[in-house]
Image (tube, rainbow, N blue to C red; front, side):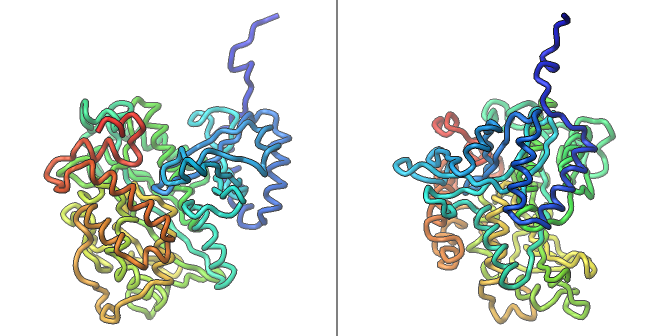
Length: 479
């Protein structure tokens, strides 16, 4: 009798990348066609049948946008679907300790068959909605809020919100480089930029591996390339409905971090980790569709946009100062808003000026859209798209903006000013809910209080170590 290797003994599901891409694209197509009940029946049956799946990973995001992942034993999950509880008090921005239990409800339309070399063999991923103990939607789960709002928009108006985010980041030397910032700072992996990074150098290898995983997940990649700054990257992918687009953001960052870690390095989405070179943004492209028609397009409209699109733009401009904290949620994000480095701080719209908060890309009937350029890559993508939708559809616009497309002025120059404007806004309370508004602002203020009010000319250790995507219990208590 021959002895078997550990891998042979485990025999968990591992699917080649080309098969994964096909499976994920078919799953996305099926999600558009089938109802929630049908999808639940199909996938529960599939999970029961597939003997080589050991666990199901459920993903959700806290109010600040940090991704959380829970692995459930497959059999336990299938037996406990109506009672998947977790401790909400352990999640920043969720329930207080005295009323901590929350529930998770699987979103069966969100299945992803994930590359085994990135999350382990024998697993599938679903996103989940967060519910109160009485199974009502939890008000600070902005994935659930976005999903509910877009479903109502579809039902009442027949409109679908579409988005695609262009997420930039930096590859820096060493593992856990952000958490070790006080020891050694951040070090660029290469000095190459946009067109100067050579094939097979570490940055290119990182981009290639990350892009391969994204294709396998059905992202429908469009462009994968180094960005303007040294060691900076960006991988672009196809439009999707708003909820799926936000899921893509969370998975994109997860993939990049996992690939970088496998190479012994760190993928960071700090908006401005280095002074003197371009920072990272999350340019958010957005449009509305009805009956297969792009509602933002009008061949005879100004810059090829419809009245609906212009109304949407002018409402975003009008409310820009008070919602800036949603789009730029960290101390570090306000370093990036500098037009000298192609980052917008002017509250205006333009078809050509990349220093404008909103740009109108060259487009046709199919691709007409607006590009919100002031969003940082560390923003909660669900909260960003929810705020954009609610503002663009329910906000107010100033009449003097009608012809000029300029509100005038600049976005807040630091997080303290942004918090003050956010706190003073009745409109923000209306669209986010008073409790979520207060919680979100309080977390931002706690971080703001841990660093100097003047940004100065160097990135401070505090703005990295206490960043919502970086900090942990140990780091937070080192203040």
